[in-house]
Amino acid sequence: MSSAVDYIKGMEHGLIIAVGSGKQGKSCSLHSLIALCWPDRPIYMLDPLMYDITAFPGYKRVSRTKEIPVGAVAVIEDVNRIFHSRGSAKNADIQGWLSIISHKSNVVCLTTQNMADTDIAFVRSQDTIVLNKYMHEEDLMFERPEFRIDQAVANRWIDIADSQHPKVDRRAWCFFPRFNECVAIPKVEWWTYRNSHMLRDVVL
Amino acid sequence: MTVRVTSDPETDRLLSLRASSRIPLPPEISLADPRRSPRYFRMASFYDAYGLGEHPIVMLLKKELLDTMMSVALARSEHLDRVAHYGAWLGNETVTVRDLASPSPDGTEGRGPGPRRGRSPFPGGGGAGAHPVDGEPASLSS
Image 1 (cartoon, rainbow over the protein chains, first blue to last red):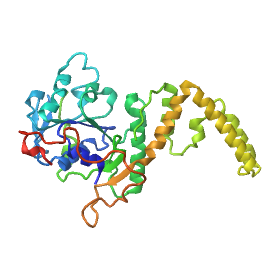
Image 2: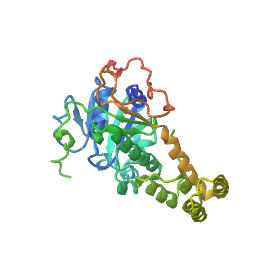
Image 3: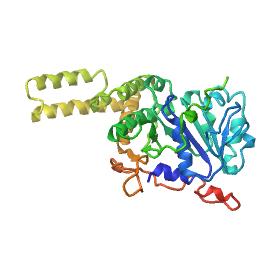
């Protein structure tokens, strides 16, 4: 099938980070990957803001990390709203939580538009799989240097994969730098406009 | 293969240009010291204009100049980054394209042509903590 998908299926704990510019299919691919790899695990949306998650069948919403039970998958949408790059010095909660997700058998899945705006604690402590979606070149110029090369290569291979498979939705393509794979993740059947605009009514 | 190197602003700028370009650039541009490459390309253009670009002596001359440029490049520490970048670029030619979104006739895999070239260096299966732990929820097994 795919080395990346097979590896993720076997993950008991760790992080999956979907990174790419807005509206490139990060959330859709991430939730589709979760459905593909762990159909039976409980899934919790971690977000302090209140919004309707009924469009996500079987999901639950929690506002604090301690509410996530053992064995669950935690999803943080647009993580830069909650755990942004300027937050580490002020709040160490995220480091504390990430250091024990291996004990609690949690997988943390998050989407971000740029790693430069994301709390770098996410990539420091656990097995982290980065899933690159397409990133616009202007955004790429401001990506962290550690991730910029992989993202540039991802852009190139998403272009190549898209030209090789014109019938596949371009936004389905994901690049996994660790596995050197460009994979089209099949969209989960319940994904609709409501899912991709879940934060439309949120007031910040 | 993923190669991570320490970068510098000039290398990043060149890589961004290369990444954003739809035109494949010749390796000489990445490997050559920018202060030496104009001479190389002037010489190549001169012989090409006279239809002698593929002449064995001209090819030998080009190789000598390219070797010199690469030697100089490797001797310059700040230039190593650029060479490493190009190495990373070449290494990523082994990327595999997998289409799981389109069902194949036998229903087992996408309709993609399979590995484009080469193989992923990492074996599949078994992520972090893949081995089940006693007392863990049954739902953990996929």
